[in-house]
Amino acid sequence: MTTFPPPIQVYTVGGAVRDGLLGLPVQDRDYVVVGATPEAMVRLGFQPVGKDFPVFLHPESHDEYALARTERKTARGYKGFQVFSSPDVTLEEDLIRRDLTVNAMAIGEDGQIVDPYGGQADLAAKLLRHVSPAFAEDPVRILRVARFSARFAEFSIAPETMTLMQAMVAAGEVDALVPERVWQELARGLMENKPSRMFMVLRECGALARLMPELERLFGVPQPALYHPEMDTGIHSLMALDWAAGQGWPLPVRLAALLHDLGKGTTPAEFWPRHHGHEGRGVDLVKTVCERLRIPADCRDLALLVARDHGNVHRAEALRPATVLEMLERTDAFRRPERFAEFLLACAADFHGRADFETRAYPQPGYLATALAAAQGVAAGAIARSAPAGKIPAAIRAARLTAIAAALGKAG
Image (cartoon, rainbow, N blue to C red):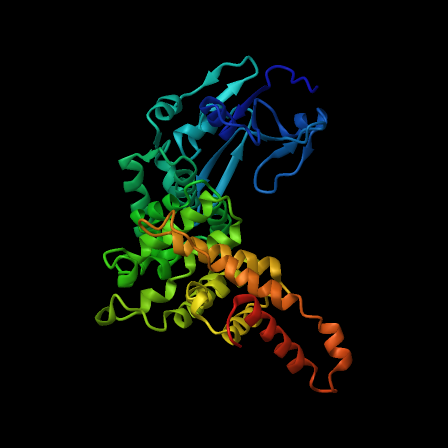
């Protein structure tokens, strides 16, 4: 156990304090060290790892310990800061640079809570409120507030904080964010219990239109009459996302559920509520979003499959066996059955993400899984050994079609 000599003081800070007070599991612990120099930390056995400011790894636990610091804005964006660290920087000075009051509390080694900016009161009031005007210096904080709104769904954002976020967007701060950081925060928010709230917050402050204009355009666009003509496509997309989150489904499925209807945002208003051909337009828009935010390939590829074929999945029971086989081939279901299973999950989220559809039966995934299993049962090796040269692919495909037709009880 490392002992810190006076006048050095160590405090647990940030999310660990917040979650502990809320009675939630504490995943990670961050520490701030007051009254120390980098040289003193090294003498105590800590390993320096910080590039932009002094951070050290504990010699035994490998937890991160950061020296108390202040920051000064020097340029636009979340990297435009000059960091100042000194033994003279107080805990209160370190805490005031943080984003929200609920994240600006500390606990000393004596167990006493240090709360100079009203974090406990805001926890009790279920309020997300910025600590100081310095909040406006870092546009990542907009994403963090949105993400915290998805995690703490019962919390509201203080009006003055929302006003400040809107001013930051208007000033162009969001435009300085790098794609990797945007995706990092969005991905974390997508995995929260109520991810729709993240996008509603981004929309309210104006950031969604700058970061994902393709999604912003869905709001105000009606759904087809079959699915409640009064229903907003943007709200439906968020309901599909929340449905996927409620089932505990993985990140690629959640993103695909969110992006599946992007093509409807390009339908001319005179054709509403019909959206003929929106799947093809949606594929192009999903590509655009994924390229701009540099979304990983596994998430991108699943979102593309769902955007293109979710309508065919909904109509699966009416499709001819040959059309079913074509969809299995197009989605690479034979080589990637696990991804095909995720594809069906995202389609189910689309179906259930509508008013009054939450508990309706959706047999299509089971129907298509039956078709895939039947086609997978074809003895491709035996066919390859008996078919004439050059005819093997056609022979295997014909056998798969026959198997699917038999399994589904339809004529080939």
